[in-house]
Structure formats: structure tokens, C-alpha cells
Image (cartoon, rainbow, N blue to C red):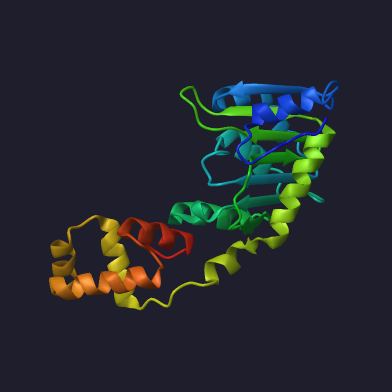
Length: 241
């Protein structure tokens, strides 16, 4: 029986498909709903990490449990321990997120940013345990925990393939960043403030016509079709907003 998996497959469906193939009859697997239940039933797994902790996520919200972060943080400088975070550009949307990732790097963690779509938001611990995050629902996210070697090794290989093509955090922030002068950055900050064009123009000492022209030029530099998109693009590039 062939296992068919797509990016739209939920963690629960992925595990169920493996069970149908007979691959997980002898391995532990369970699903939980919401962050509280995840920590209650699987929180000890984070503290059990000894050699490797891998995290793939779209942003910093999926795996934001303080207990889990503290458990891994305590292992960061242990001899022979590797911690890697693989994130999408959305994770750089604000300065607080970028500061957190720099702290992770300064503690010894490795951080890379990938433009590729991450099919699963995943945590892999010591290549023996995997936690998959599902979509957000009315009662919270569904998380599936498994020790199946087939699943763990398969997703580990996928993680590694994307990691190899991803950019280091600092390199990503430096690459392809538009050359904005001081006025351009002020315009960007004005857009982020939510002020009306008239108010922002007056604050910057520009005529309304000049301000709108500068906004249009800024959007072109950021390759953005709207002001909202310009703000997102600025976050992806690590520009102040």
C-alpha cells in the first residue's frame, strides 16, 4: 500500500495513513488538543532532549509555550547538543520576534529562514520523537505526537533538505534589503503608525502630494502592491517599522 501525503494533509490524517499501512502498530502515537493539553501530556519530552532539537514553523506563535522554551534553553550550551530553528519570513514580521531569534542564536542555537513553504510545523527531538502541529481550531490546535521511526526519519529528511537551501538569519536580513535613506525609513514608520496621509505629511514637513509620491516610490522599492503588503515586506526584510 502506497502512502500518499500532500501539504494539505493534517497531522492526524498523516498518522492515520501510516497506521493503515501497518507502519505504526508498535509505536506510540497520540493526539492532543490545545497548548495546555500538549504540555500536560508531552511537556516532559522537551526536557528529555539530549542531542538534538529541531523546530520548523511558519512563525513564533505555534511553539510558544514558555515551559517548553525554558526546557530547551537550559540545554543550549550542553556539550554535543544542537538546536536548529527553521522559519518562514513571516517570523521576522516585528522587531520583538527578530530580537528573540537573535537571542536564540546568541545562546548557541542555529536559525535559518526559508522562502519554501513548510508543509508541516514540526518539532523533532533526538530523532526519536516528533510533534506535528495541526491547524488552529475552535478549541485550539491539534498536536500529534509519534515515535514512529518511519515518520520521524522521513520528516527529519524533509527538514534537512529545506534547511540546506535556507539562509542564515543574519544573511537573510542583509540580503536583498532595499537601500532606503533616512526619509524612506521615516515614511515607512509613518505608514506603520496608521496616521492619515495628511497627518503624516504634516508631521514630516512634506506636502500631501510629495508624501503620496514618496509612499508610491517606497512601495515600488519594496515590491508591494498595497500599503499593508509594504508593512509585511518590511518585516520580512528586517526593516524598522
